[in-house]
Figure 1 (cartoon, rainbow, N blue to C red):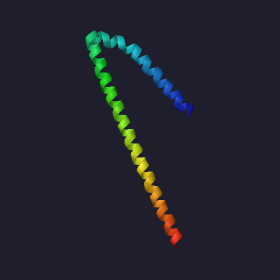
Figure 2: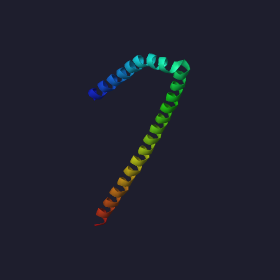
Figure 3: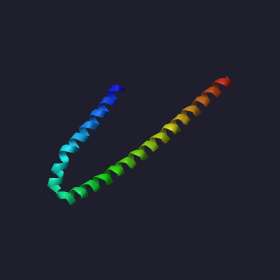
Figure 4: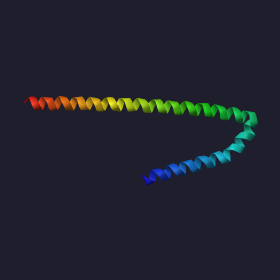
Length: 85
């Protein structure tokens, strides 16, 4: 678990460092209005990915719940069959 936490922190620090270094380059290359447009497009895309991830997580939760219920029904059926013997 500590390894996962550490790798998440390293990734966060790396992302911040790359953004800090690349932002002046991107602003110089695209210009201020181009950078604003780029930031807007990136924000819209990121929010879409986030909502898609949330929908996928909800779907996985539903599938997991239905599999759990199916397992419980199957177990109940086996228990009933053993009781009838």
